[in-house]
Image (cartoon, rainbow, N blue to C red; front, side):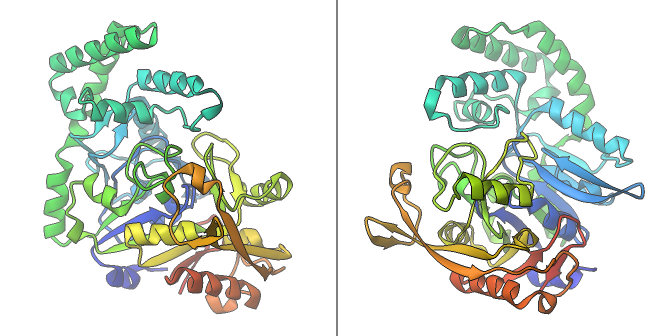
Length: 433
């Protein structure tokens, strides 16, 4: 199927945004739309993202998980950008590049790394684990990939950027100073000189990929190139707008995408929100529509809800209208992709969390404090489920009537059209309305 006519209506610059707590299935729509785009970019986060693509490689079906490189890399003629807003763990990046190379996917001359992106080192991961352990019963539930400590260094102006690799003597001074400080603060035994030698080789490997991506994107935009921005995590993991402190360390909204690429906000034409047909969350933090263990376990197994990055089991619950509607507002979402609708096939009944009550008063936005969020009551609408397998359906009209009713009710409650509907994991299993 060609999506060119659809993309013409979506505009030149498109952002794919998660509307829940991440793991919504963003990679699949990115992969589909990437066919008709020229540039696929990531703007925020790091290797804590896990975007899974089920595709054919060498005539065989294969599941590929991306952590740093945009999942549009599977398309051999596309430029892929790692933007200035990201934190890059180079060993993970090199592993990912090698994985793609083994599958016959070359990245030379089409993977661009922002010279302003910050480096995430192994010691950031050590700090992450130490800090999480020190929180005791108040753990945030991080992936322990070092994301928070790397962003903390960036904000405290201690960060080291990819551009620094091009002046290696200065890079070595900065790295030595940082590692000495970490060893003293966290009582770590770090082999500083070995790390410097390691990055000497890395600098030579990565140097051809490091460019001013802001300048590149500006030129591409003025040339009329189509740009697809691949969001990471979800709206309610945003450092400012999410369920703080149980959040990531970057801005996951459309505003964060613009800053993370040096892209002027008025150039962003369309934001597509990705929402599962239900809700999941990994790690700690309040989750108003979470199901009790037995029911949650059944939904987890039906949806194979385990983290692509960590393998951790995801907490599962009913669709939460307040959560998705808040994301629609803060990111300017104009259309939605509902994913994993097929998981509900066989369910007798399905519930939708339609609104929150706090102290018996309806509220339209998620409270700022987790203490208040834990106190909300959720009003539910119960709908009958459907028995039929929908994984082979190609048109909305061919879905069971009860399935159609569920989608239409979500549209009504959210006030936003659902244009794309995922009915399976494969690239082809996407209904477009």
